[in-house]
Image (cartoon, rainbow, N blue to C red; front, side, top):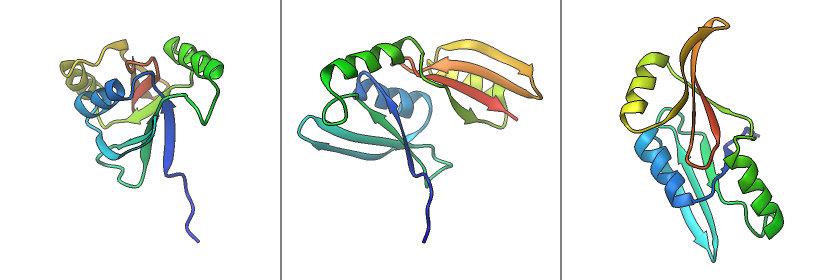
Length: 133
């Protein structure tokens, strides 16, 4: 039996806005985009990781009630969720390329802990670390 994590999800405030950001600015591609009424299952993939999907999910029913959905959206917007890590070969080059595509960085590349890293946030407020090992 084969097992493993195939999908990890992020809460986003607007799935269309998130899709545009992850595809046009970060270079991901759409894996799945299906709807069931108001619910939308939207996942993207990094082109070099075809076995892993990043879900871009709106906090909503049936997963959570309206009050919880609002609280989750507020927490994400404040950057309160744990950051995700995007590993790259050259942090400074990736930073320059992504900045050229309109990604706004909250931290410029810096050397520390034996690596080079930079930070950015998606339009919903989810934090990302760009890391060169």
